[in-house]
Amino acid sequence: MIVQHRLGEYPIEFLSLANLATRLAGQVIITDTNVAKALALQGERIMCLEPGESSKSLRTYEQVIDWLVSRSIGRKSQIFAVGGGVIGDLVGFVASTYMRGIKFTQVPTSLLAQVDSSVGGKVGIDHGLGKNLLGAFHPPTEVLVCAETLNSLPDRQVRNGLGEILKYGFISNPELFDLLAPGEIPSQIVIKTCIQAKIAVVEADELETNGIRATLNFGHTVAHALEACLNYEGLLHGEAVAIGMAVETFIGDKLGITPASLSPMVKGQLQRHGLPESHPLLKSPELLIEAMRRDKKRTADGIPFSFLTDLGRCKLYEGIAESDVIRLINAYVVEAA
Image (tube, rainbow, N blue to C red):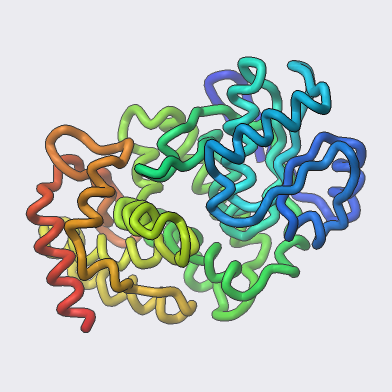
């Protein structure tokens, strides 16, 4: 598969674990301790970070820059981001800024990163006031996908990736639901289908200028608010997105945008795959609104949401009144009780 972008193109290659090991030999690698252990990565040119969202921070960013300088990594060097979405986002942001930009390769090892975050060129780090507030559009030179790396994932991390896979089913390809079996690692066909859907959207709206790419944010307005309010602890991103999709489908229904039949269908799919539909923070919608106000996609008129307009179709709606969001989140909590 090839991804076209404003500066050129990059390939997405599927390869075996043995071939991946060959490609990584001798490269400058930034990973986390869990992935380094699983893939037996070690050496002077390998930097291991703590796993988890907390590493997507200014503090870790500075540590990575210091490490690159100490290893005399120059402008013509290339960094390999080997890990999940956190590593990919962080390393991509480092690559976009270090010496005014160097090349990097995405090597996604988590399900969520393989089906979503490694493709599209969006990179960034979190700030205390919001998720991905510091970021850039910096396409990788290539994406190397090895499905065998998923075999070492704990069940919760598999479900985490399923949150994003189900999103693609809801917004563009409902046939994905028939390809998923609860409790099982999705097939390479599922991964490729999600990547193809992501490529189509990214190529149509690489820099998020016409609203098409915003459809990928279905569930993410609520999800990012939950993550920010929790200081990026306790909920994995795919879990937060699952809750967000349930809540935003409900809101869209009550606003007359989303067909009423979709709310129970969305919940049913989440339940089938063991994903959450609610969280205690939903009882404090005013706190979530404060976080939504800091969302980088917010407009002066209100809160933006990507709502389902039908199964397999999604559209960005800007300027949803804060009072409506608070009222409908409260209604969701009552109905879910």
